[in-house]
Length: 295
Image (tube, rainbow, N blue to C red):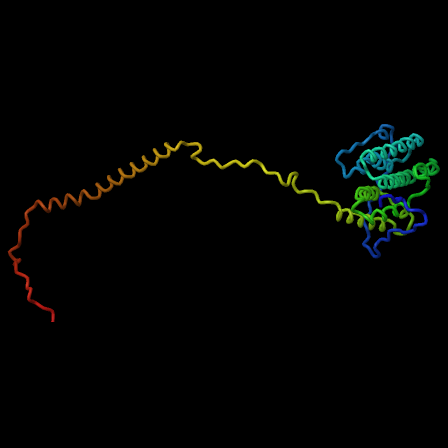
């Protein structure tokens, strides 16, 4: 949508229609109200270097102030708060432009942030009577008095090309998660519709945000060292000596076993040979009958 005005005109009445019959969303109730916010908390600046995306990083301080303002029951110096938030919006613009973010995304994000901050302040116990509505941030930067409806028109326009507007879509998702409702604050079943929009937005972001690599360096490969065997540590001659010693011991043991096993047999044979043999008288020496046949 480069070159187009990211903020639709009042004549464009297209709105996001939540899915009919959707299950009731689980809305997070606002935090319990707390004491007045002090000057130190207002002047605290949040710097993110590795946040969700460059647009959200630039809005970190404003998002933090939104959370703190939602929990305040009173504020003694509203003009000082207005000045502080005005300066933060300008700082946000400067950061985003220096980061090279597209102009249409910067304008849309500024419109969204002004609308969210105005809504947060006007829904505090002290906001309605502070005169903030006559000097709202939206009227100061965009010359409009209410952005509760147009924010969702911007969201729909960005959703037409989600792949090129993921940063602003993620900022929208954060603002919805922080409690921004816009026009749905005053309509029937507004909480359910907001939850449906937020869930659909989350799915869109998930479907288009690139999946991070599972490894820091997928193609990293360390130097491969060859495995070192025992021969790398023990000289070859030691192996040869051990083998030869084993063979000698085996041969010597075999000879000893053979001698011990055959000596009694050899002694007996020798004794039989040296002793004269006597023939019994009962034994008659006859010539073999070579003429005998088998019939």
